[in-house]
Image (cartoon, rainbow, N blue to C red; front, side, top):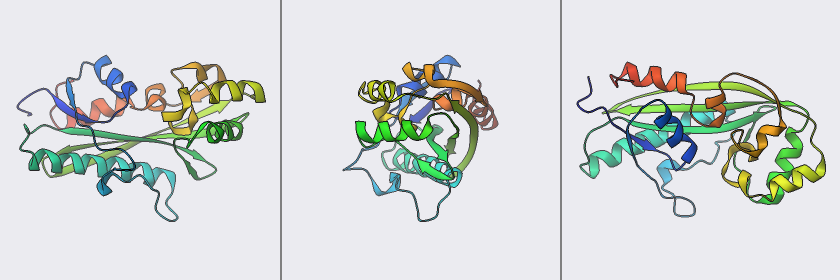
Length: 204
């Protein structure tokens, strides 16, 4: 069993903080440096030929492993560290966060009127052990017109989100159907997170 019912969350996402709070998990944030000063250990550049599921699991695991390394080198209290990565799979291609509003609009146009997959991988590091699981959900967008794409792309809401939209925000009006985990689409699948924490003794 864990000595203390508290974990580290290696994420800047306010949605993940809200979701952990929703299920009563107590946590402290561990924030890594962001580009262009990002650490090599947390580089999110896809590898050549890497498929979206393998990519999400690799990135989440790398963040958890680097967090565990920092805990040891900084002599922080020993606790589990949870990391996650969310990406879209569109025709087998990795679609991450948009570069700017034009890129956001192009991504949304690509998602319009069709179904894509949202993959969120979560990794938990405890001492020298890391386990990673992933949730895959299908999201179908209705047909979007150019003006609503433009309005949403310039609202700044999509700029820090994989696939250029947040289902918990204004983009909910684009979604015709989902199959899978709503919390996973937001950024942290709560069912898988709960089971993973319990496996390592966290009382949730």
